[in-house]
Length: 291
Image 1 (cartoon, rainbow, N blue to C red):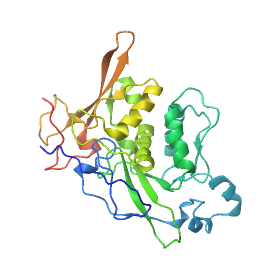
Image 2 (image 1 turned 180 degrees about the vertical axis):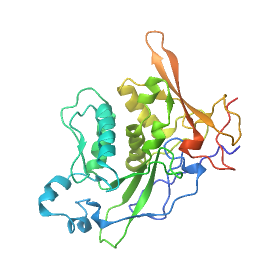
Image 3 (image 1 turned 120 degrees about the horizontal axis):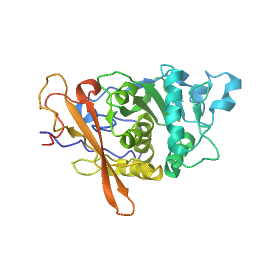
Image 4 (image 1 turned 90 degrees about the vertical axis):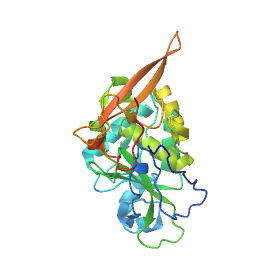
């Protein structure tokens, strides 16, 4: 049973070489899959602060797009953009957070409740020096929930900034079942924040069972601020109800915990899904079996 996740190299330099994926069986599932090739980012992606993108943007749109480094690819439908924005509004407390007509992420003002740390993370990404492109990867077998990987500019752009692509498989999240509090703590919005924390903070995922890892520890702080249960460990496990075979369903589970007042006892919540539908499992690289 292979329980070792690859070590992640911290990105101390803006140079994008070679391509690598932040591995993990929850948001990415990439440690169970072949590493994808570079994603070529076209200059028409409208990241306005990059000189190459400015050449392709109408002048009247520059005022709207030059303040955000997070943009959607054209293939990310308006309905999906609004779905993702709705998740982020609930997490951050920014009721006016949105994706504008060009697909750029616009942060809100005057938050009501929500997570302060989530707002800080999104602010750092939107106003930082790295481009982040959001892509719809729904029903792709090589993406489990979410995945981040370095991008590469299609044309040589002098003084270009580093760029990353976040793939989101919305269909995977629709296949998850479980306790309502855990479902609220595990959706496309939380998946995106997980990937952005990798990009901004160079955070690492766990490498063994029983711990959430550096990146999820940051996300758990945000969940706590939202009054939601926190993820108990990074790796999902086979459900005790599942026979370790290739027949029909292969249920896996992920646990969340929340401390109850005043007893301070931890209440456990579970999520379950069929790994055959979501993906992330290949022969020879399987997740731990919980008996």
